[in-house]
Length: 239
Ligand SMILES: [Zn+2]
Image (cartoon, rainbow, N blue to C red; front, side, top):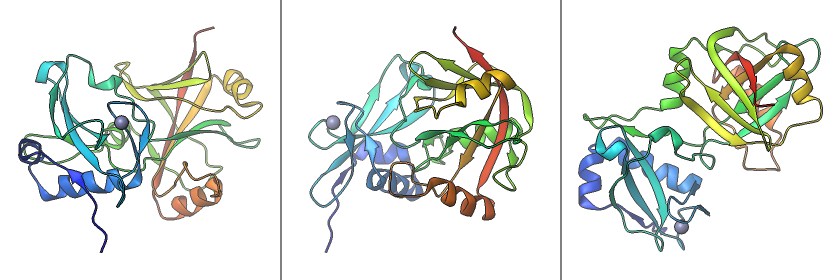
C-alpha cells in the first residue's frame, strides 16, 4: 500500500473548507511543486512528505494562495505575509515554453503555458479557482482549433520580453498573469519584434517538465480535445 504523507494542519483544512480543495492539494503535491520555503522542486511520494501552507497575502486582505513545502522545510500552517499575491513564483506547476510557429502563422512567436495543476485560490465558500484560466477566459481568449490558427489580438493583453529571456504576461490592469524565464528558440525574438505581437496559448494535459515528451504532438492532441485556448498580446520590451 502506498502511503503518501501530505501534512495538513487542522486550521489549514478548515480554511480549505472542502474535500475538493484538499484532493486538489494532494494532486498538486504529487505532480510536483516548488517548495515555498527553500525554492527547490519537490514531489509528494512514499519517501517524501509535503506540507500544505496557506499564504494570506497583503496581511490577509487579499486572496488566500495554497503553496506546498517539503515536509522537512515546513510544517503545515497558515502564514500571513505583506506581499502581493501576483508575485508568487509558480513556475513549477505552471511551466511555459517559447514556441516559434512556421510562416505564415500569425503571430509566429508564442508562449505556451501548460498548468500542471490548478492554481488554487480558496474563496470563503471553499471553492477553488484556477486564477490564470479564469483570468484569461474573462479577457476573451479563444479556443484554438488547430496549431496554425490565427490568434485573436486582445487590446488589454501584453507580453513583456525582459532581460534574461524572461517573459511576463500582463492583463489590462498590468497584473502579471504569468512570469518566468524561458529558452527562446532562434528567431523567436525577431518574429515577436517584427509582428509586435506575441501569442499566449494555454493548454491542459501537457507535461512540459518531461523532456522525453513531444510537446507539440501533445499540444495537437489537446487542441483536438478542445483543451487549448489562445490569444495575442502586444509585445513590450525593456530595450
Ligand atoms: Zn524545501
